[in-house]
Length: 295
Image (cartoon, rainbow, N blue to C red; front, top):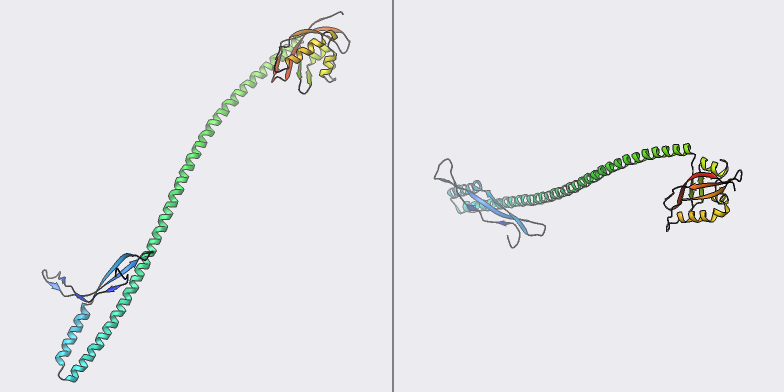
């Protein structure tokens, strides 16, 4: 069987079994043994099915029948008939044995098929377990990543809240400072102006317009500002403004100069107080009217 990988059927064997009802005695038993290989996917023997069929009744019946028939034989003709009956009985027994072997083969095939089905089912089950384990690992990693993101968002929200509070405090302080500056300017009648040398935009406060004698409806430009400078002071003032708005020099704009008022051509002295530069492109100044020059 190991060489041919086909079922092997042995001769009928006698193997007595102990009599449980009478200890020390045995019961006669006859067995029809067979061995059937179960092959795997590669055609190798994976299992061997050993089957021993109890044929004691059949053997004992045959022997009893033969004995009775032999006792009844009296003539050669009876002997011939008995031999014929025995031959027919043996033929029937052989056919029964073949049918039994066929049933055994069907049973073996069914066992092999079922074994293969169980192996395939086990493989699918293990694959499913592996997939579930992989999914669980990915889910655990995703949960850890989400937890880290949530923690970062919490820290970011706390930082934003703190920055918002700081910005609110700065805005409140700026509003208070602006209010105090506005009150100071209004009470002292100081003028302020703001110049952007990149765009040429010029802003004059109401007090500054009063000092220069410029109506509120008139547009304030740097060219008009230059024209209102006294001719003897114009070059100095423009040079100071250029130096104050230059990123390389960053010079302070602090000087006194004369202007010619727009509305009445009156000459006045003004003092441009301490200045500051925002992003090196804006020049802001505080004008203090000093006195009126008679000439």
